[in-house]
Image 1: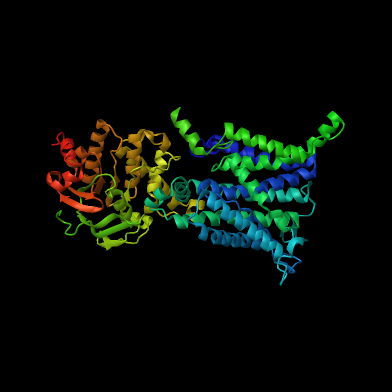
Image 2 (image 1 turned 30 degrees about the horizontal axis):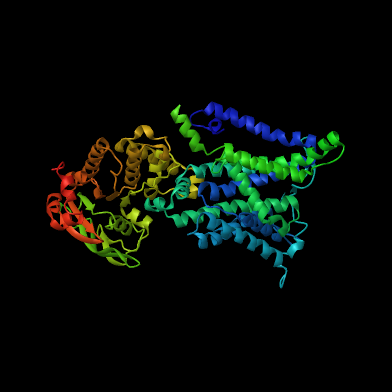
Length: 357
Length: 267
């Protein structure tokens, strides 16, 4: 995958690769619209999960800090957006102000979580972050009294979509003879954001900062002995990961138009972590693949399992939800057996194989 | 004392470290001069590695003070100690196992380079130049310790002796004034040890002072200018290799003359 985009060694191939991917990405929503508008929405949600996974990958994949409460930052970003762009407080700030603001607030929360957990690793860190995720959700659930800040379990409704001047991302309109529905417009924006975030991820990984994170992941004591300020580097990882979560949260708010604490439960944290692990911890392209797979497979099942069983047996024997869990279990077992490092293991291992050949 | 440097590079005064009731280090004094190879020996459990850990900030001393290059270093964190110019290797090799040899050394450059998040994301000319310099220097250091061909091998897949060399290269990448080596010859065969001896000589010649913990007495006696002997956390002897090996206290510490047996080949 990566060698296609290697500008230094293979510039021609890289450009061909980039053009092909760009064309595929540009055409994709129209293909999906052909199947059904719902699929464009599903694609958007999948891209959102790609964003989330890339953020978590910085914390878990690069720096090796197991974070089970990552969804809290998503929640923080989502609520910052919802509170500042909805009738709840009757504030309607433009998205290009609130989205970065949401990222900044999530970043602050990342540091707040990071600071007390600096000395923890592995299981202990996982438990503390899990607790943090739950604390945020419970606060969101209960901050409707004494002052109604979050509207409690009812959540926040009628959240503004993205708007630039008179251009509204949620409405349908015809541009240059093409029929752009709301989801299609969001799709292009999301693709743009995700590309920026992918580039940031790749560049961070191949930098002095990324190497310091990897050193901490491999051996913290040796990292310190080599002069790496592990405290600052860990806080930086938490902060970067959290801000990506915050941005995703803001986009989630805007695309859904409604959020409640229900959307930010522990299972979501585990889902994002599974995407990172399934795809290949620490490998940006693996993580993207993991996120897309785990977002799409359940949806495909939802649409195929019922008609298939109806056609075969005349009635439904196993609900799509159950099949999904069965498949997840099977995938987990197969992965542990055959690809313990993920579907696309980290780039380093590949580099080593190349060097041997 | 070497000419041009009136003060020793490192002075230790009254260093003490207790673990519960055990005195791992009791009132240890010594001084290392610029440009020497200073040996640190003693039976197992004598406190050699504890002294390394106190020196490099992994443990805090219960008493005493280090002065390094004219400034006190007591209470500094390990990363600050490294920034001051003390780099170390570990007795039980602590490489970044899943990273390539080259990357291990590139990480050693961290403390002498400056790129931050903004630089990493935007990759401006300055950051790119720095990255290139880091990679070039890492390749040079791999060649210097003699494992240039292993640059892309994961650290954990390197042969044992090469792992020891990689640890030295990684430590040298931090541009230390004092290189502290914790049993670099452990597990090496005679040929490997001989070439390690050559490497130590090169490092000293190129201006880095070396503090060496080693059990291979042949190596210690042939390469070290002066030797400090610890036993039960106390300094029992200090001096040239020849003086120390005649010291009755040292012989007693090494179980009644065993050390003499080992040394016959070295002399």
